[in-house]
Length: 302
Image 1 (tube, rainbow, N blue to C red):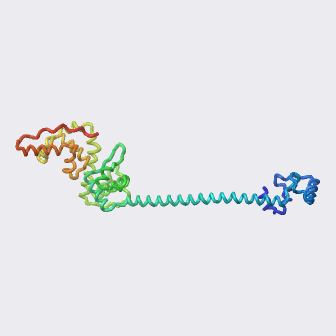
Image 2: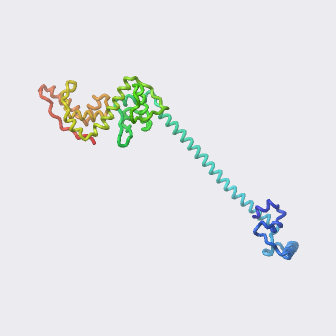
Image 3: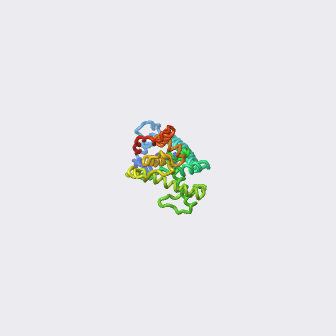
């Protein structure tokens, strides 16, 4: 109240302040008491506490100075705190902006596909296809990424590029978008391939997806394999119907259709190599007898 009153009335009007009707310490004193107060001030008795109706000017000025000093000190502390908080906020905003810029550069770099990356993607997708889980409706890119040497590409980037690649192949073959296909990213440019390659790639992608998503998980697979007909002249004589046909399905799903003589045939989980070696051994011996029967096939993987 004192601090607010002094600027409005001045320090010389402090005695009049005590009579202002706007402040709570204003009490209308008895004129006789005011006269006694003035006499006491003149006689030098203002130092006696409890006898004054209003503090003298020197005391009011000293208290006013202390109040202003304390207020300025407190205001300075608050101002320093606010400035420190603002500096911290600016530093945090700069760090966030730098992180966002770095993330944008990383994402933009992932979206850019070099010629080597595009060539590796085409090589693998045209022979291995893609692995898709219908239950979770998500692609599994682990084996694809390892075969294509695309370790720096995320699952999201590979999925986006795959949708754009399929759309490009269908456009080259003058085919409408298939039901359920996602729209390609318009910002992603994929260099077109020839119509022959696009048609063959679409066929193999669909073939391998049906193999992985429908055939291998069919409950009557083994019964259907038992009905396989004997191989024709295009198959080797050591080929065993049913058994090797089932291993061929699992091998194609695991390794794809590229270099099958070094991937599927030499896979230790299958009996192709042992059957061939057994046949060659029997021919080298000149016995002319058929190859001995192979052990029963292992159970199919879950």
